[in-house]
Image 1: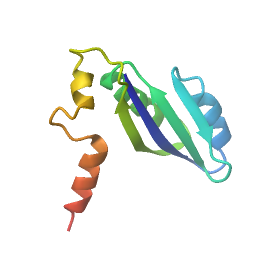
Image 2: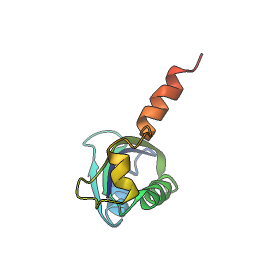
Image 3: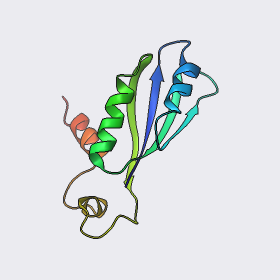
Length: 108
């Protein structure tokens, strides 16, 4: 199971309302910042497709300005044979975060 965290930036003045609404999303923990228009969202989803769907839903949510991927890992209890298990061990693929950093470093 993928476990991911995101920094969610909201429009000014709507942080609390967005946080309350995101708390209704299944398998999500929501922590609004004490100051500023920022929310920390931690989610555990069934698979990578569900994680991508969740991220898309959060990005499209009213009042959300942007969503930044902060952390991602796969639960060590993921069964053998599950493609996520190979992804956790590296499986020859870079994480999205590593890909973004590599892409940014290649910019002129």
